[in-house]
Length: 377
View (cartoon, rainbow, N blue to C red):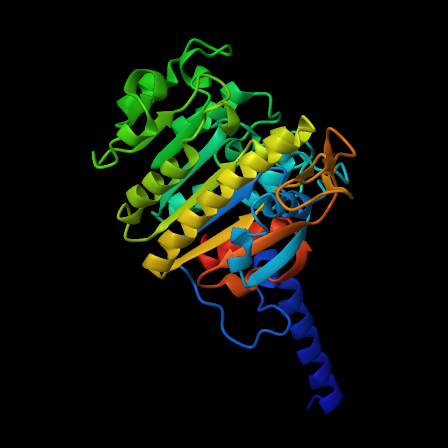
Protein backbone atom coordinates (compact mmCIF):
# COMPACT_ATOMS: atom_id res chain seq x y z
CA UNK A 1 0.00 0.00 0.00
CA UNK A 2 1.49 3.38 -0.98
CA UNK A 3 2.49 5.71 1.82
CA UNK A 4 0.88 9.08 2.50
CA UNK A 5 3.99 10.79 1.17
CA UNK A 6 3.75 8.77 -2.03
CA UNK A 7 0.08 9.69 -2.48
CA UNK A 8 0.83 13.37 -1.85
CA UNK A 9 3.65 13.20 -4.38
CA UNK A 10 1.33 11.73 -7.02
CA UNK A 11 -1.34 14.40 -6.34
CA UNK A 12 1.28 17.14 -6.56
CA UNK A 13 2.52 15.79 -9.90
CA UNK A 14 -1.03 15.65 -11.27
CA UNK A 15 -1.65 19.20 -10.08
CA UNK A 16 1.45 20.43 -11.87
CA UNK A 17 0.33 18.76 -15.10
CA UNK A 18 -3.08 20.43 -14.85
CA UNK A 19 -1.55 23.82 -14.20
CA UNK A 20 0.96 23.49 -17.03
CA UNK A 21 -1.78 22.41 -19.43
CA UNK A 22 -3.80 25.58 -18.92
CA UNK A 23 -3.93 27.56 -22.16
CA UNK A 24 -2.83 31.20 -22.34
CA UNK A 25 -6.50 32.10 -22.80
CA UNK A 26 -7.47 30.38 -19.57
CA UNK A 27 -4.69 32.10 -17.67
CA UNK A 28 -5.27 35.56 -19.18
CA UNK A 29 -9.02 35.36 -18.61
CA UNK A 30 -8.59 34.77 -14.86
CA UNK A 31 -10.39 37.13 -12.53
CA UNK A 32 -8.14 40.18 -11.91
CA UNK A 33 -6.39 40.56 -8.57
CA UNK A 34 -8.71 42.17 -6.06
CA UNK A 35 -11.90 41.29 -7.96
CA UNK A 36 -14.10 38.85 -6.05
CA UNK A 37 -17.05 38.51 -8.41
CA UNK A 38 -17.66 36.20 -11.36
CA UNK A 39 -16.93 37.57 -14.82
CA UNK A 40 -20.02 37.92 -16.99
CA UNK A 41 -20.13 36.90 -20.65
CA UNK A 42 -21.48 39.51 -23.10
CA UNK A 43 -23.42 38.69 -26.23
CA UNK A 44 -21.64 41.36 -28.28
CA UNK A 45 -18.18 42.96 -28.29
CA UNK A 46 -17.28 46.35 -29.74
CA UNK A 47 -13.50 46.79 -29.97
CA UNK A 48 -12.50 50.41 -30.60
CA UNK A 49 -8.89 51.07 -31.60
CA UNK A 50 -7.49 54.59 -31.70
CA UNK A 51 -4.37 53.97 -33.75
CA UNK A 52 -1.40 55.81 -32.24
CA UNK A 53 -3.47 56.96 -29.24
CA UNK A 54 -1.52 56.97 -25.99
CA UNK A 55 -2.22 58.71 -22.69
CA UNK A 56 -0.45 61.88 -23.94
CA UNK A 57 -2.85 62.16 -26.90
CA UNK A 58 -5.88 61.52 -24.67
CA UNK A 59 -4.59 64.19 -22.28
CA UNK A 60 -4.01 66.74 -25.04
CA UNK A 61 -7.47 66.17 -26.52
CA UNK A 62 -9.00 66.52 -23.05
CA UNK A 63 -7.31 69.86 -22.40
CA UNK A 64 -8.48 71.02 -25.83
CA UNK A 65 -12.06 70.17 -24.86
CA UNK A 66 -12.56 72.21 -21.68
CA UNK A 67 -10.85 69.52 -19.58
CA UNK A 68 -13.55 66.97 -20.49
CA UNK A 69 -13.17 63.51 -22.02
CA UNK A 70 -15.40 60.52 -22.71
CA UNK A 71 -12.76 58.33 -21.05
CA UNK A 72 -13.89 59.61 -17.64
CA UNK A 73 -16.95 57.36 -17.97
CA UNK A 74 -14.88 54.18 -17.74
CA UNK A 75 -14.34 52.47 -14.39
CA UNK A 76 -12.41 49.41 -15.59
CA UNK A 77 -8.98 50.50 -16.83
CA UNK A 78 -5.76 48.63 -17.53
CA UNK A 79 -2.55 48.90 -19.55
CA UNK A 80 -1.03 46.65 -22.18
CA UNK A 81 2.61 46.18 -23.16
CA UNK A 82 3.07 46.86 -26.84
CA UNK A 83 6.36 45.30 -27.97
CA UNK A 84 6.37 43.01 -31.01
CA UNK A 85 8.32 39.79 -31.53
CA UNK A 86 11.27 41.55 -33.18
CA UNK A 87 11.17 45.10 -31.85
CA UNK A 88 10.53 46.87 -28.56
CA UNK A 89 8.66 49.47 -30.62
CA UNK A 90 5.79 47.79 -32.45
CA UNK A 91 4.14 48.82 -35.68
CA UNK A 92 0.39 48.72 -36.32
CA UNK A 93 0.52 45.40 -38.18
CA UNK A 94 2.16 43.46 -35.37
CA UNK A 95 0.13 45.32 -32.76
CA UNK A 96 -3.19 44.56 -34.47
CA UNK A 97 -2.19 40.94 -35.05
CA UNK A 98 -1.57 40.64 -31.30
CA UNK A 99 -5.13 41.90 -30.66
CA UNK A 100 -6.73 39.89 -33.46
CA UNK A 101 -4.91 36.57 -33.00
CA UNK A 102 -3.12 36.57 -29.65
CA UNK A 103 0.43 36.13 -30.97
CA UNK A 104 3.54 38.28 -30.91
CA UNK A 105 4.80 38.62 -34.46
CA UNK A 106 7.32 40.70 -36.39
CA UNK A 107 6.68 44.30 -37.45
CA UNK A 108 4.88 44.36 -40.77
CA UNK A 109 3.14 41.00 -40.33
CA UNK A 110 -0.63 40.87 -40.86
CA UNK A 111 -2.51 37.85 -39.54
CA UNK A 112 0.57 35.62 -39.49
CA UNK A 113 2.92 34.54 -36.70
CA UNK A 114 6.68 35.07 -36.52
CA UNK A 115 7.13 32.04 -38.81
CA UNK A 116 4.80 33.65 -41.40
CA UNK A 117 2.12 31.03 -40.70
CA UNK A 118 -1.54 32.16 -40.80
CA UNK A 119 -3.20 32.44 -37.38
CA UNK A 120 -6.97 32.53 -36.74
CA UNK A 121 -8.48 35.91 -35.87
CA UNK A 122 -11.25 36.99 -33.52
CA UNK A 123 -13.39 37.83 -36.53
CA UNK A 124 -12.90 34.36 -38.00
CA UNK A 125 -13.58 32.67 -34.65
CA UNK A 126 -16.74 34.75 -34.28
CA UNK A 127 -17.87 33.65 -37.73
CA UNK A 128 -17.28 30.02 -36.74
CA UNK A 129 -19.69 30.63 -33.85
CA UNK A 130 -22.20 32.07 -36.35
CA UNK A 131 -21.88 35.55 -34.91
CA UNK A 132 -22.28 38.65 -37.08
CA UNK A 133 -19.05 40.54 -37.77
CA UNK A 134 -17.92 43.97 -38.92
CA UNK A 135 -14.95 46.25 -39.61
CA UNK A 136 -15.01 50.06 -39.86
CA UNK A 137 -11.98 52.31 -40.32
CA UNK A 138 -10.95 55.82 -41.35
CA UNK A 139 -8.11 54.29 -43.38
CA UNK A 140 -8.34 51.88 -46.27
CA UNK A 141 -10.15 48.80 -45.04
CA UNK A 142 -7.05 46.84 -46.11
CA UNK A 143 -4.71 48.88 -43.89
CA UNK A 144 -2.67 47.17 -41.19
CA UNK A 145 -5.15 47.33 -38.32
CA UNK A 146 -8.41 46.28 -40.01
CA UNK A 147 -6.39 43.97 -42.27
CA UNK A 148 -5.08 41.99 -39.30
CA UNK A 149 -8.61 40.89 -38.41
CA UNK A 150 -9.37 39.44 -41.84
CA UNK A 151 -6.16 39.00 -43.86
CA UNK A 152 -3.11 36.74 -43.67
CA UNK A 153 -0.08 38.17 -45.48
CA UNK A 154 3.63 38.34 -44.73
CA UNK A 155 3.79 42.09 -45.34
CA UNK A 156 1.34 44.90 -44.61
CA UNK A 157 2.31 46.39 -47.98
CA UNK A 158 0.43 43.56 -49.70
CA UNK A 159 -2.95 45.25 -49.57
CA UNK A 160 -4.13 43.36 -52.65
CA UNK A 161 -3.47 40.19 -50.64
CA UNK A 162 -5.32 41.53 -47.60
CA UNK A 163 -8.33 42.32 -49.81
CA UNK A 164 -8.58 38.62 -50.69
CA UNK A 165 -9.48 38.00 -47.06
CA UNK A 166 -12.83 39.65 -47.69
CA UNK A 167 -13.57 37.08 -50.40
CA UNK A 168 -12.68 34.21 -48.08
CA UNK A 169 -14.73 35.69 -45.23
CA UNK A 170 -18.46 36.12 -44.67
CA UNK A 171 -18.02 39.43 -42.86
CA UNK A 172 -21.43 41.05 -42.53
CA UNK A 173 -20.44 44.71 -42.91
CA UNK A 174 -17.28 46.64 -43.73
CA UNK A 175 -16.82 50.37 -44.21
CA UNK A 176 -13.60 52.16 -45.15
CA UNK A 177 -11.36 53.29 -47.96
CA UNK A 178 -9.26 51.20 -50.33
CA UNK A 179 -11.61 50.40 -53.21
CA UNK A 180 -8.60 50.29 -55.54
CA UNK A 181 -7.38 47.11 -53.83
CA UNK A 182 -10.65 45.43 -54.83
CA UNK A 183 -11.45 46.94 -58.22
CA UNK A 184 -8.15 48.16 -59.69
CA UNK A 185 -5.67 45.64 -58.41
CA UNK A 186 -1.96 45.51 -59.25
CA UNK A 187 -1.41 41.89 -58.22
CA UNK A 188 -3.90 40.43 -60.72
CA UNK A 189 -6.86 41.35 -62.92
CA UNK A 190 -9.55 40.07 -60.54
CA UNK A 191 -12.51 42.33 -59.80
CA UNK A 192 -13.21 41.66 -56.14
CA UNK A 193 -16.14 44.07 -56.09
CA UNK A 194 -17.86 41.92 -58.72
CA UNK A 195 -16.91 38.78 -56.79
CA UNK A 196 -18.40 40.18 -53.57
CA UNK A 197 -21.60 41.12 -55.40
CA UNK A 198 -21.73 37.57 -56.78
CA UNK A 199 -21.56 36.34 -53.17
CA UNK A 200 -24.65 38.41 -52.40
CA UNK A 201 -23.03 41.54 -51.00
CA UNK A 202 -24.53 44.99 -51.39
CA UNK A 203 -21.47 46.99 -52.45
CA UNK A 204 -21.60 50.76 -52.73
CA UNK A 205 -19.24 53.72 -52.52
CA UNK A 206 -19.15 57.40 -51.71
CA UNK A 207 -18.54 58.49 -55.31
CA UNK A 208 -21.37 56.65 -57.04
CA UNK A 209 -23.90 56.21 -54.26
CA UNK A 210 -23.55 59.28 -52.11
CA UNK A 211 -22.92 60.00 -48.47
CA UNK A 212 -22.90 57.28 -45.79
CA UNK A 213 -26.29 58.58 -44.66
CA UNK A 214 -27.84 57.07 -47.79
CA UNK A 215 -26.47 53.60 -47.09
CA UNK A 216 -29.34 51.11 -46.97
CA UNK A 217 -28.80 48.74 -44.04
CA UNK A 218 -32.22 47.10 -44.33
CA UNK A 219 -31.65 45.17 -47.53
CA UNK A 220 -30.91 41.86 -45.81
CA UNK A 221 -27.60 41.55 -47.69
CA UNK A 222 -24.07 41.66 -46.35
CA UNK A 223 -22.72 45.18 -46.87
CA UNK A 224 -19.51 46.76 -48.13
CA UNK A 225 -19.21 50.54 -48.42
CA UNK A 226 -16.07 52.24 -49.77
CA UNK A 227 -15.32 55.75 -48.57
CA UNK A 228 -12.31 56.35 -50.84
CA UNK A 229 -10.35 54.78 -53.68
CA UNK A 230 -7.23 54.71 -51.50
CA UNK A 231 -6.93 56.51 -48.15
CA UNK A 232 -9.74 58.77 -46.87
CA UNK A 233 -9.16 62.45 -46.12
CA UNK A 234 -8.42 63.69 -42.60
CA UNK A 235 -11.36 64.81 -40.49
CA UNK A 236 -10.14 68.42 -40.69
CA UNK A 237 -10.41 68.28 -44.50
CA UNK A 238 -14.00 67.11 -44.62
CA UNK A 239 -14.08 63.39 -43.81
CA UNK A 240 -16.95 62.90 -41.38
CA UNK A 241 -18.28 59.39 -41.83
CA UNK A 242 -16.93 57.51 -38.79
CA UNK A 243 -19.70 58.44 -36.34
CA UNK A 244 -22.64 57.76 -38.72
CA UNK A 245 -20.87 54.64 -40.01
CA UNK A 246 -20.53 53.36 -36.44
CA UNK A 247 -24.20 53.97 -35.71
CA UNK A 248 -25.31 52.32 -38.95
CA UNK A 249 -23.02 49.32 -38.44
CA UNK A 250 -24.24 48.75 -34.88
CA UNK A 251 -27.86 49.10 -35.95
CA UNK A 252 -27.26 46.64 -38.80
CA UNK A 253 -25.49 44.08 -36.60
CA UNK A 254 -28.02 44.40 -33.77
CA UNK A 255 -30.49 41.93 -35.26
CA UNK A 256 -28.12 40.22 -37.66
CA UNK A 257 -27.51 37.07 -35.59
CA UNK A 258 -29.12 35.57 -32.51
CA UNK A 259 -25.57 34.66 -31.44
CA UNK A 260 -24.48 38.30 -31.18
CA UNK A 261 -21.73 40.19 -32.98
CA UNK A 262 -18.09 41.24 -32.95
CA UNK A 263 -16.98 44.49 -34.57
CA UNK A 264 -13.68 46.37 -34.68
CA UNK A 265 -13.87 50.11 -35.32
CA UNK A 266 -10.65 52.07 -35.86
CA UNK A 267 -9.87 55.76 -35.59
CA UNK A 268 -6.97 55.25 -37.98
CA UNK A 269 -5.66 58.74 -38.52
CA UNK A 270 -4.79 59.71 -34.94
CA UNK A 271 -1.63 57.81 -35.83
CA UNK A 272 -1.10 59.76 -39.03
CA UNK A 273 -1.25 63.04 -37.12
CA UNK A 274 1.48 61.72 -34.83
CA UNK A 275 3.67 60.71 -37.75
CA UNK A 276 3.22 64.21 -39.19
CA UNK A 277 4.01 65.78 -35.78
CA UNK A 278 0.81 67.79 -36.28
CA UNK A 279 -0.92 68.37 -32.93
CA UNK A 280 -4.11 69.73 -34.51
CA UNK A 281 -4.36 66.64 -36.74
CA UNK A 282 -4.02 64.39 -33.67
CA UNK A 283 -6.54 66.30 -31.57
CA UNK A 284 -9.23 66.66 -34.24
CA UNK A 285 -9.03 62.95 -35.09
CA UNK A 286 -9.22 62.03 -31.41
CA UNK A 287 -12.20 64.31 -30.81
CA UNK A 288 -14.03 62.51 -33.61
CA UNK A 289 -13.00 59.16 -32.12
CA UNK A 290 -14.43 60.20 -28.75
CA UNK A 291 -17.79 60.75 -30.46
CA UNK A 292 -17.54 57.21 -31.81
CA UNK A 293 -16.84 55.92 -28.29
CA UNK A 294 -19.90 57.83 -27.07
CA UNK A 295 -22.04 56.21 -29.79
CA UNK A 296 -20.76 52.75 -28.83
CA UNK A 297 -21.42 53.36 -25.12
CA UNK A 298 -24.92 54.64 -25.93
CA UNK A 299 -25.67 51.47 -27.91
CA UNK A 300 -24.25 49.29 -25.13
CA UNK A 301 -26.28 51.07 -22.44
CA UNK A 302 -29.51 50.47 -24.34
CA UNK A 303 -28.62 46.89 -25.25
CA UNK A 304 -27.41 45.81 -21.81
CA UNK A 305 -25.42 42.85 -23.10
CA UNK A 306 -22.54 44.47 -24.99
CA UNK A 307 -18.92 44.81 -23.88
CA UNK A 308 -17.11 47.92 -25.15
CA UNK A 309 -13.29 47.94 -25.16
CA UNK A 310 -11.22 50.97 -26.14
CA UNK A 311 -7.46 50.87 -26.63
CA UNK A 312 -4.65 51.61 -29.10
CA UNK A 313 -1.96 49.54 -30.74
CA UNK A 314 0.84 51.96 -29.76
CA UNK A 315 1.65 55.62 -29.17
CA UNK A 316 2.84 57.71 -32.10
CA UNK A 317 5.07 60.76 -32.14
CA UNK A 318 6.17 61.01 -28.53
CA UNK A 319 3.40 63.58 -28.03
CA UNK A 320 3.86 65.85 -24.98
CA UNK A 321 1.86 68.78 -23.61
CA UNK A 322 4.46 71.45 -22.85
CA UNK A 323 4.94 74.22 -20.28
CA UNK A 324 3.10 77.36 -21.33
CA UNK A 325 -0.02 75.41 -22.28
CA UNK A 326 -3.42 76.76 -21.28
CA UNK A 327 -6.86 75.18 -21.26
CA UNK A 328 -8.04 74.90 -24.88
CA UNK A 329 -4.69 76.25 -26.08
CA UNK A 330 -1.98 73.64 -25.55
CA UNK A 331 1.62 73.76 -26.67
CA UNK A 332 2.80 70.39 -27.97
CA UNK A 333 6.22 68.90 -28.67
CA UNK A 334 7.09 65.57 -30.32
CA UNK A 335 10.11 63.36 -29.79
CA UNK A 336 9.84 61.30 -33.00
CA UNK A 337 7.97 60.93 -36.27
CA UNK A 338 7.65 57.22 -35.55
CA UNK A 339 6.12 55.13 -32.76
CA UNK A 340 7.22 54.81 -29.14
CA UNK A 341 7.22 51.89 -26.72
CA UNK A 342 4.88 53.39 -24.12
CA UNK A 343 2.39 51.10 -22.41
CA UNK A 344 -1.11 51.79 -23.70
CA UNK A 345 -4.31 52.24 -21.68
CA UNK A 346 -7.26 49.87 -22.04
CA UNK A 347 -10.76 51.04 -21.13
CA UNK A 348 -13.70 48.64 -20.79
CA UNK A 349 -17.39 48.90 -19.95
CA UNK A 350 -20.12 46.27 -19.94
CA UNK A 351 -20.43 42.59 -19.00
CA UNK A 352 -16.98 41.15 -18.25
CA UNK A 353 -15.23 44.54 -18.27
CA UNK A 354 -13.40 43.72 -15.03
CA UNK A 355 -11.16 41.31 -16.96
CA UNK A 356 -9.39 44.26 -18.56
CA UNK A 357 -8.01 45.68 -15.31
CA UNK A 358 -4.29 45.39 -14.59
CA UNK A 359 -1.14 45.31 -16.71
CA UNK A 360 -0.68 42.62 -19.37
CA UNK A 361 0.70 41.89 -22.83
CA UNK A 362 -1.16 43.18 -25.88
CA UNK A 363 -1.89 39.55 -26.82
CA UNK A 364 -4.09 39.31 -23.71
CA UNK A 365 -6.66 41.54 -25.46
CA UNK A 366 -7.29 38.58 -27.78
CA UNK A 367 -7.35 36.12 -24.90
CA UNK A 368 -9.81 38.17 -22.87
CA UNK A 369 -12.22 38.79 -25.77
CA UNK A 370 -12.02 35.15 -26.83
CA UNK A 371 -12.86 34.07 -23.28
CA UNK A 372 -15.63 36.67 -22.91
CA UNK A 373 -17.41 35.50 -26.07
CA UNK A 374 -16.56 31.81 -25.47
CA UNK A 375 -15.01 31.60 -28.93
CA UNK A 376 -13.43 28.35 -30.08
CA UNK A 377 -15.35 26.31 -27.51
